[in-house]
Image (cartoon, rainbow, N blue to C red; front, side):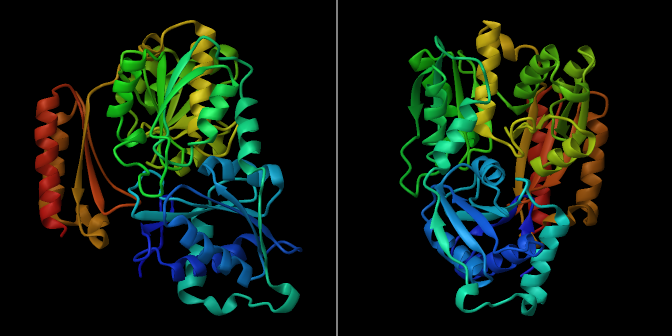
Length: 449
């Protein structure tokens, strides 16, 4: 079966890779590991996005939890960051989100949160995996009154919306906001929270039917929102992904404001207010060089981690920072929530927009983004981490790195959730970068089938 956990929980094609049996066993092992220190019958909050496979996997997962004596409380369709927040608010022992985030509808995933609302450390994921694969006999099977139950949380989405609206003291009257909800988990909370704060609104991709999540929409497909903002004369637009832990923006001219620019906008604002801890923003190795240049110019510290919001968060906790994120739109405001929160991010950007009186394009102009090209090589999933062991690939990477030295950079990394090796080149000449990235990606695909 191989390693189950990727960079964001367990993920795969629902009903073939992520089966009901696997979900049941994850429910058993996860509930046991996360709650074995409790002296009471544990309570675990469960949420999901809008995928058609969510009901099926929720039933299996909850059955597994109940079978080891845990009580499952169902939050229904809510964003991932709602689970992180509500676990803390309600005092639950753990939380679980059923979602494959930005992936297509055929995928689904299961990710766990501890009682403090944080995604699990590698050690805990390894413990869950070891029990599930190698030592299932340690799991209890209580009988009678020891069996767990399930119940419904009637107020989950309303409590999350209240949290969002209280995250700012700014009202957004006079601002017209365009939203793309990716036909996903933000379809209720996003519009309601922003409307409650006084903005006017126009919305697309806000009618989930179980099969249209992320379908040519949301933060991975920004084309519709760019057009929509211009057509409706919106002051700014925001796009979430399927589980709403990501947010990207579009200015009034339809130009993209990516996660790096959002970090720049919010980081400068927080520094001005005196709330940016240790004068530091945390990014990743994929962070655009433009943010590095801005940080040097503005005497900000920029720390970089491996790719993945969990690694950004770990650095933030370790060194007491409160702002970090990724180019893809995972932005963590640690003073407010313990994970990337797309709707919260939109609200924080809107707060800066309103207070500054500037246009979105003017806010975004504080950082010049250097051109980047990203090409995905689709490979055999079992071989994706072996690219540096192939001499031809290794030599090609060395040649390319030398070619762009001094005026850009080359970064190769594997996807934590898909059978992909990603080739990223950053530099000046977009055409040469694209040509070289595609050439290397083709070689990687050829050698890792």
